[in-house]
Amino acid sequence: MNHLTIRLETEKDYRAVEELTREAFWNVYKPGADEHYFVHTMRSHPDFIPSLAFVLERDGEIIGNIMYTKAWLEDETGARKEILSFGPLCIAPAYQRQKLGKLLIEHSFDAARRMGYDVNIIFGNPGNYVSRGFVNCKKKNVSFVREGNFPTALLVCELIPGVLDGKKWMYIPSTAADCCEDTAAVAAFDATFPPREKAWQPSQEEFYIYSHSSVVR
Ligand SMILES: CC(C)(COP(=O)(O)OP(=O)(O)OC[C@H]1O[C@@H](n2cnc3c(N)ncnc32)[C@H](O)[C@@H]1OP(=O)(O)O)[C@@H](O)C(=O)NCCC(=O)NCCS
Image (cartoon, rainbow, N blue to C red; front, side, top):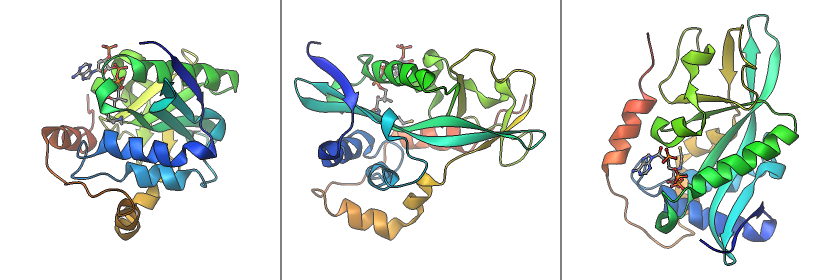
């Protein structure tokens, strides 16, 4: 594919990125989507990292993006380490499965390393990320909510290999995504886009399984 550019998001891109996000996520994880509202709101959250908000352009059209917030890991002594969490990450449906998501992940990881970050943790479908260096949180001793709880969808990538070795960690996500709990606000924001039918599709059940299960042994 020719003329691919990755650059930082600017204010002029905001609506195009929200439209892209809505299109890419629609009906994938639930009937409809709320990720475009998350994108809209997270830019003014204190944990948002604008210097890691990248868009992917093809001939001047935005066909992908990735955004990051700060998150934290707490060790057994209560000491906290600032880490990264990305999401949403999306590629326009017409361009998916052509390694463009990989391109955005690798580009942003390089930038993150230059900024001094060494760990990235996300909740996601393992199928999308295990070939990008992510492993289940149990392998890195990263618990969530309570010690020894290792959600299947909680995936850890060390940007510096081995940096988490030798300790037990508790994952503390940003509160940026909490905005999506306000379903009235999500619906009001969605109403500013063209109407679209909400429907069930199998990927929703797949993600239900991932997001409601844990690795126990
Ligand atoms: C998920 C998403 C960002 C991935 O981007 P992409 O450009 O389509 O993916 P890539 O081509 O870079 O990589 C696809 C990887 O996913 C995996 N994969 C999972 N299901 C696959 C499928 N049906 N076909 C091909 N690859 C698949 C493969 O491991 C592949 O990596 P590999 O071939 O290098 O081993 C994109 O598909 C998307 O926007 N989906 C909708 C929104 C979304 O789910 N975002 C992520 C939130 S967790």
